[in-house]
Length: 94
Image 1 (cartoon, rainbow, N blue to C red):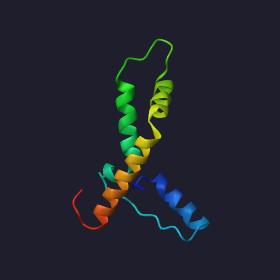
Image 2: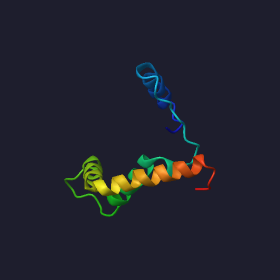
Image 3: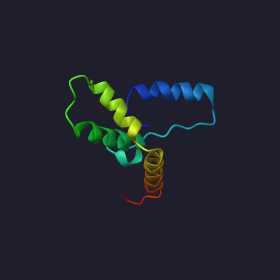
Image 4: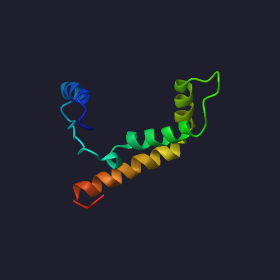
């Protein structure tokens, strides 16, 4: 998790429900370790490609762009973050 204050609440809930989990906080400014950052970067690029149509809302464009991301691409993003996380744990520069 990143260090957003809301995540402290999530950590507390996870700790209450299951003692087997250990939350690990990501270092600041480390989007390579957080797959959601890579996903949103992809969605933002898709949203910015074209102007909104008269009847289209920004929310609709975001939902459409998110739904267009292939599952394989999401799996690749997650694997990339896992690899980078392993590198980080092994003190290999990312």
